[in-house]
Image (cartoon, rainbow, N blue to C red; front, side, top):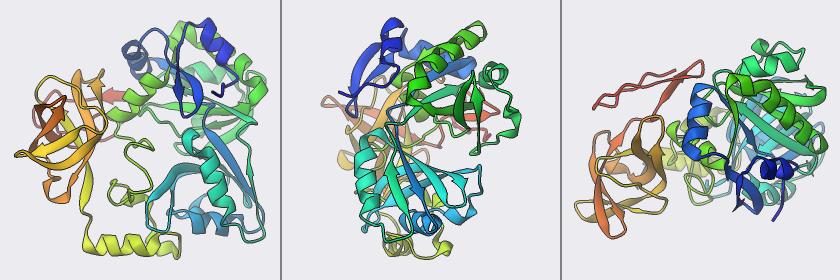
Length: 377
């Protein structure tokens, strides 16, 4: 298995290490729930150096990215980031990515760890001329500092005014003496930052952040908490909610697609699907009976199969079992009652609005109401 530059630091911290996408990664340190709640209340520091980075440079860089993605890349200004999707010819999701525009003709693309090599080869197969595509994953480490007090912790370590970095924007400056790309594109639903640094600077930066943040409640956090945090916000995870057989319309990501921008890979398939209507939809589930709905568990309505679970957990914030799953489009209505098959036993569940929690300036708010009406941040 591959190891990030923080492997020794994780061992010193007593992390439980597991295999993830070919990497030996910390799943937890002192416990998933404790780390999850620390991020919601204070801050957590994640090693996400396993994520891949691909650079696209050249006079035709914008046109190339525009053709390969569904969002409108021309709208991205220098210093701005954009959530985007790579599609195959059938409209299925090759990967969900974040584009960072560093210069008019220079993009840094963050891709999922499990897809790094696949995405690079896929991009290379579409190269025509006027661009250079390079897999630079081995050059970068990435640390994610997430939580309501993240800015308070980070600001003393940099001369850059962090308040100037808005959501899905970034700056390039020093942090604790190390050159970093400082971004706000988090995956937890909390305020925070992603720090892209040189691979060899990662361990020192990690230690400096923990030293600076520990008095404010900062703790190292593993992939377990990262998963429960993103699930509460209903953020999709590739290989669960997204894959090459799933279209963004089925996944509730129509807001990402900009049909008006013109031609892109998968566009005609998506237009037909939009006109005809999708056959399945991604929904949020709350379990009524005790149990946890895991990935691939069947979803039933009156004993017949209507879909499957893609992700599930017991929400540490809400203290309820929640899940995401695909169901037949005609069943995808709020408050619809259905069953989850858990080890040959049916457990009652209902469809609820997404996201499961809402945030406002990093502070999670939720109502303990049967109607599951949420405030939107």
